[in-house]
Image 1 (cartoon, helix red, strand yellow):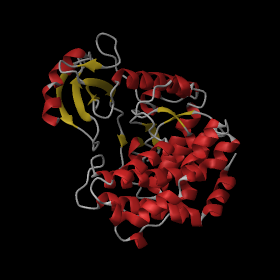
Image 2 (cartoon, rainbow, N blue to C red):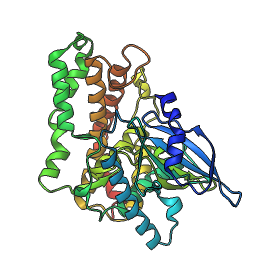
Image 3 (tube, helix red, strand yellow):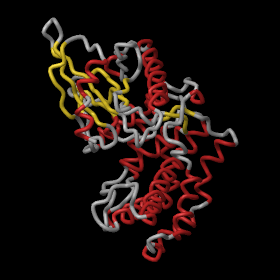
Length: 371
């Protein structure tokens, strides 16, 4: 895949007018889904400008036209909001560079779909929140993202990954994997299987609230990790939310919850020693403060009430997915050793248990910062 993508770069360069001569391109970033390159362009004035070129994964995204329609619509909306607030849209949101034919992406001769963005200069992308301040900065950015898109018609967006946070469907997939037990692994995961079964009704909590109209459908990012926020090099403020491939209709509590799952603990995702895996209520407090400050009153009372559920359900869902993959033979999540997906699911379920033990405290944090 890597060499194949590189072989099409000249074809991609020819499809775009990047304002000068392309001097070269190098692979860029640490992403594992799309093929990403940084292209260097020399302008007639002698400047060197950088662009991000990406070949979108055909395995992950079957309909690049729909994906790019989402991104174009959302980024145009964000540009208007940023300009109205006196900000700089060139730095505070991604800008889709059209092809020479005016299209949002280019399809190469083998059917690969490519897109281009101007490089957002003087920013850094961090892989982990090494300080509470960085966790807060990411929370502020994702909360602001919610606020600026709160009036965007979510039902006009395509589902780029079908039933991505449908926790009920994730449970059904688990049941099918358990019933088949194709590799005879169920015997080694009895406590984890029982844990999932005991939490079956939880899998319907958020979706039932959506069906009843308690929770509104929102534009959601669906991958709210720190490394999807560009930080200003000088100030370390979160200035631009990136990786918009999974922007689609969803629940705001899921975006909040996925960040908590990812960041409100200090252990590796596959930590074997569960005594080292602990939900950190202080980090939860820090993220909540930033997220609600960024959201600036855009969330409804019901959304505020259900935020702890977002944290619990995103963690539970992720654990169910790891366990399902373990039962099916580790075909979805890449593993480096036997039992790694089982260890991953155990860390998630330990975090869920910790959240349940601190449930009242989680609710109190929301009340402290709710507007």
